[in-house]
Length: 292
Ligand code: HEC
Image (tube, rainbow, N blue to C red; front, side, top):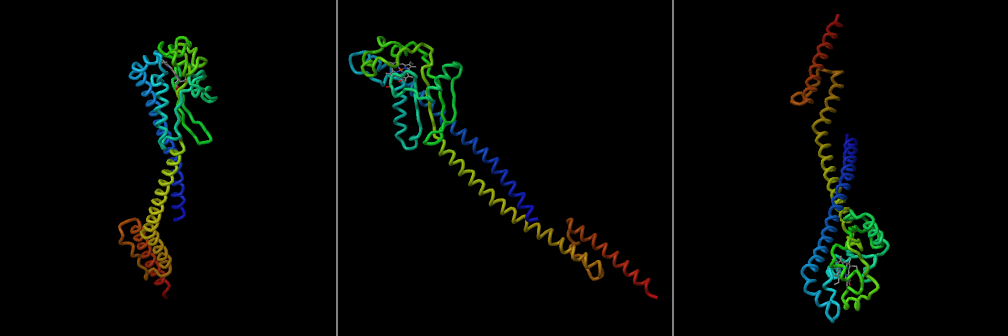
């Protein structure tokens, strides 16, 4: 009995852990997706703020004789805000990139991985976002990328030909890169990546804690069930069985006390009691017949 119970409980525990592993896995994935989307949306909001609120004020300065003020450029503000964010230890492993095939600022030059993403956006103009996992020496990362398309004619003022760009920009960035972009062309990609290690670890801990709790519950339930079964059913059954054996030899001296119970054990005891009485009568009759 105890063995059957432990086998059933162990199998249930195994099944529960497998199901929970899946469930916690989905939960962790969901959380990572939420984080990446929030991160991307925040960066888009910074860009928009720069375009709408900062650029109109700063742009006129760039057309003057002074030095170029990159604060007017959405890409610059997004990168700078992200640098401040990353200075906090919690975001050390996060990354934000505005990678371009032919960038104005050479630090935005797309690497092999980024280039393949940008190329895929250029080949399929209807794709608005791609995401996936990336393994690096620092661990595994979830990335989300969106295409950067030249959607406004105004972008071309600084990205089409050097003679249209502010002189101050040419002095700061040179005239050999970040030009030749066309309207509606995908020139690069915004790519955020979020570390997964911590979440995977906390998923593992939740799974372990839940499995432990389940195991303790199963063991307690198993022990209690076993004790109750033993006390209420198994022991009375053993008693009835040994009395039935006794009754087969000396029926008159045996009494099935369990017959007072109102459950199935009681029923069984009552049946044995009746059988015992019939047996006693039969034996008596046999004895009487043998008397001369
Ligand atoms: C005032 C000139 C100016 C305008 C207008 C402008 N940009 Fe830029 N852009 C720059 C400069 C300068 C940089 C480099 C900023 C830095 O140092 O990070 C840049 C950087 C970028 C980058 C990052 C890759 C790279 O080239 O370094 C992208 C993408 C980009 N711009 C897209 C756009 C789009 C899209 C628009 C129109 C909505 C636009 N830009 C309008 C000047 C401009």
